[in-house]
Image (cartoon, rainbow, N blue to C red; front, side):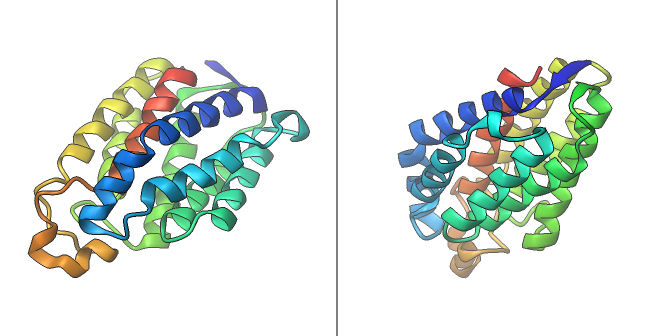
Length: 206
């Protein structure tokens, strides 16, 4: 088991915010090919706002994640704000009380976040969206056993594979779907940023 408290969540979200900032131009370039050319810049703005939240001001991890979710909804344009916001809201809502947390409890929260995104975006695996990276990540986490660190590492590996698998797909959801067959051959920006999120979790939550 590992610990759960607002400082732990802050470490995760701060790491993700740093990765988004460092890769903002890359994410935007990916989005330029098949979307609105704003995924990196929008998510960077939102995660900088999340990173500015004071972890010490929250009673527990659930409250912190819910505030992070609402911050993303209010500051990030396009689809990524509501989708990432929903993810953090659902994860926060599914977490146990602060203290020791088992891999199975992280898995429950992780799966709740995925369910929120699927419900909000109405996407499934194969649609060329963030779901293509997040779904295998959740499955790998669930299948990794009781070691939290190993579970997050497995999730990160699976997420990267799901991200890479979006390249040949024809988009069926979102702005990219307007391109039809022309969307094939491009890596999905949402799946790419989700992989950064899971890789941050693997570094900080194990």
